[in-house]
Image (tube, rainbow, N blue to C red; front, side, top):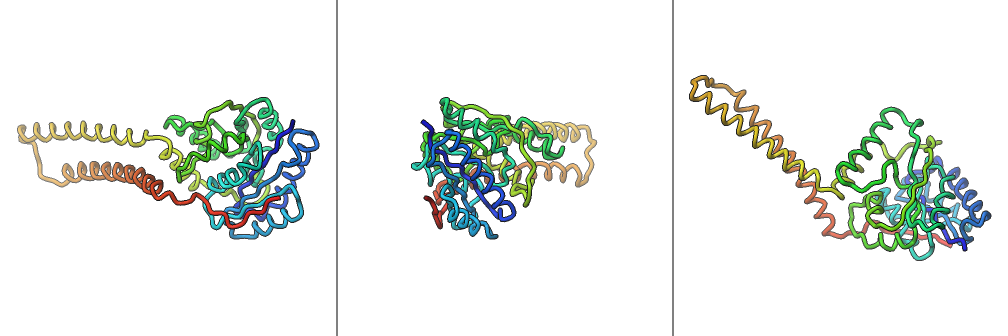
Length: 315
């Protein structure tokens, strides 16, 4: 028997592409229902993450005109990961399967049917994985692949070339609810839950309109959040960096003592200033890194809500 599906679409300032994307998704969902892949209770859920343009007005109009469309409005911009989480947790008791996809539809929606089939065959999580980056620039391709390589080397449990395009069974959503951390990195959390998983490969499309919500600056911040949320490797690197500094200091000490007895010491600021600058800089890096982890602990202890719902339009 076909199960109910909700496709969760986080939106932030998407007025340029919303009508095109929503129309495409609605037609595709109708096709899945007509093909008996999912049942007629299936829906789209658009999550407005505090947009500053007319995205929410467009979502309201879409919900009013289409019985298969739902909408959530967050009280402010909480960030992409929080918007995705809100869409999942606020619908956790309404549907059997959940798919998350970005509003730009660069992720190929044709892969959704394959995900649904894999779920019907017992997979609790189905990851959408890119197998072709020919549409990316050299810089984008190299930085993206470097991101996944770095995350894996740091011990972060990500799926290579997988972002946030995936299908999850309601069992996964209910387990996800037990993860209470404020610093969300969902693509790292999902693999830690376990259960049977599959991969569906697809080629990502170019964005039709609007601007990417993840420029390099945000991607770097996202990567840093993922690393510090899942791995203590940077702390270990600081430890070994400190050991290396100590060894260098021993050599410098030996050099100074030998020079003293050899009578070759000269007065000057270079031999004093350079070691001081080197070691003080190293200490600042170490203190800053430790501060980053302490800051995360501080945020987690406060246990503030990860999102706040202002309006919920569902039918």
